Length: 231
Image 1: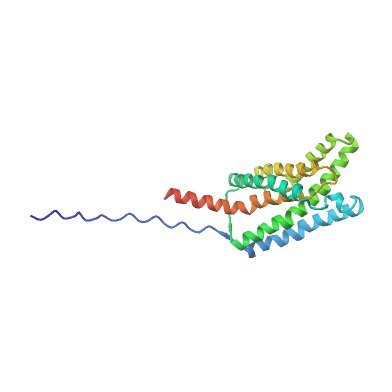
Image 2: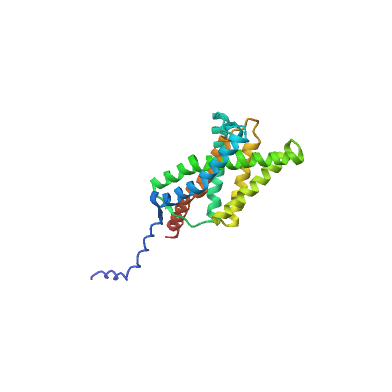
């Protein structure tokens, strides 16, 4: 007596399609906007800061260019900036979930730009120059003290946030960058004189890189993890 034959297998379900690779950002693509941003935004910021420091601000120290302190600038900057960069990653996912995954070389290029060029030039202009002038203007009406410093800080923070609308940022993104700008401003105005621009620069660089560059890598990772779970 023969054993029953094994039933024939039915047609197999098609394998799920391989996820398409994420869109990439390259050094060449980044350079196309970096040189324009540097020439038409950061260079004018630097020029305005230099003119103010030379003729009215009391020189380099008047805009926060003083000796670098490891405890004050580096350690405190990292202690504030690293958590802020993490918050920026999460905030980026909520307000701007589309992304271009940078290549390794492009990630390094963008990070260098945000840390070594964008953050110093913005902080020298916005905190070293604009906020200093705003505080001095407030002192004319309110007298020297915390009230004038707070008014100058608040005015500068509001203008700093609003100016990002020129880059067509969404209002939710502007709310986030305004809050971050408030942190940068406090990191400067709460220091004893002479104030160091390097502290808010480190915080600013980490937060901006987290939102605009590392955020792309994080979004790609989240998208990949989501695809793996759905299979």
